[in-house]
Length: 193
Image (cartoon, rainbow, N blue to C red):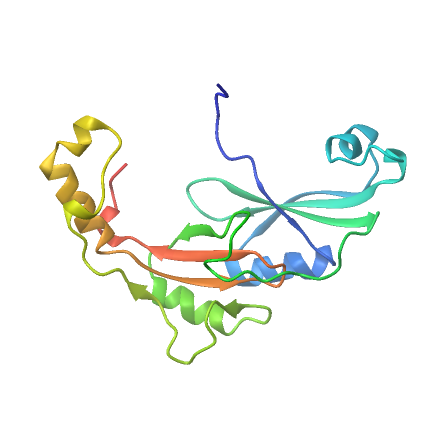
């Protein structure tokens, strides 16, 4: 079994690292931390799957930190050689394959929505003027189960989870690189681990 230690980073391949950095700074408040310009490294190239002509692989890598208590690092990569597909595929929420979204928690989901909907490059998951953050309807203990038998048998824990789930408000947006993000507010979970 693999013993995981935590999340390393989220990789996003971009066409212009400066433009992408500006987007993530403006939209999510990302802070540039480190850059490796025009990186050429045979070990990197081979680990990334470029076994043929690994000495020709050239990429600029920039790490950005998202300003939140749990460390989240974005790793932006702009490949200079070889070039990959240039088109960005935009997935719908229910499309199959790959991670469908990355969830970030906020204190004020409406404020985050207003901030993001006016940003260049941000596409809401639904373009309707009626689209906005929505709160989940209430759920009952019968609608879900815990895999831990002790939690499953604990009526108070089940009711608490229903209370938390019923307070979640969220929305989805897609960035210019095809990454789908969920912005979520869970006010009833504040202070819980």
